[in-house]
Image 1 (spheres, rainbow, N blue to C red):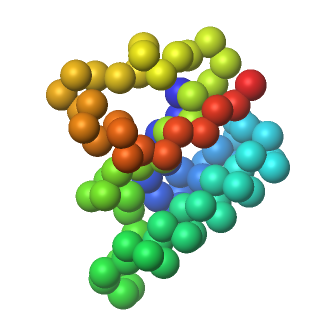
Image 2 (image 1 turned 135 degrees about the horizontal axis):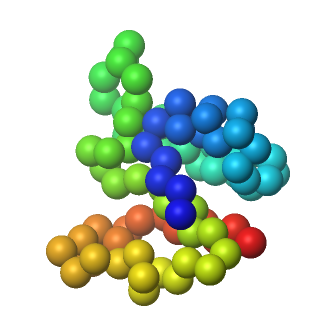
Length: 84
C-alpha cells in the first residue's frame, strides 16, 4: 500500500520505480487536478493530508484490510487506485 500526500511522494515513487510509470502519470495528473481545485495558500507546498490522500492498494492488499472503523467516513471519499 502506498499513501500519497505530496508531489514529493510521487517523485520518490517514480525514482524508486515502485509503480509502473503509466500508473504514476495518472496519479500525478489526478494529484495536480486536486491541487488546482483545493489549494488555498500560494507559495507553500500543497499537501493532501488536510483534505484526504491518495491510496494505491497493491496486489494482495484488500480494501477491507485497509479500512479502519474510525476513518470509514473519510474512506468513502478517498481515491483508491488499484495496482497489480
